[in-house]
Length: 82
Image (tube, rainbow, N blue to C red):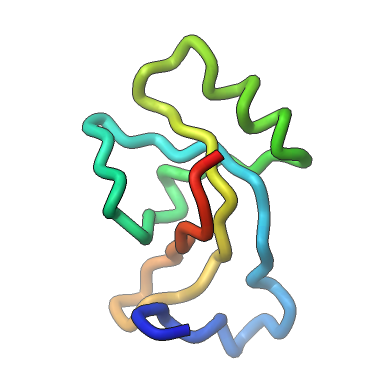
């Protein structure tokens, strides 16, 4: 997991791969981590895709998280854009 913060040790098994919509006012394809406040988790990939339709600032993605950063914030890491 080069470039990623280790999974949160306070909650073994909390971090997991999930489908989500990511709020980004300006899309940056090379961005690979997002604060938890910008991520909405969905049950399926199709649900994430459907939730992002019609909103130019929300993008469907497959993410890993949440993970606690060294600054104490919770982050999600991009696995792939949907």
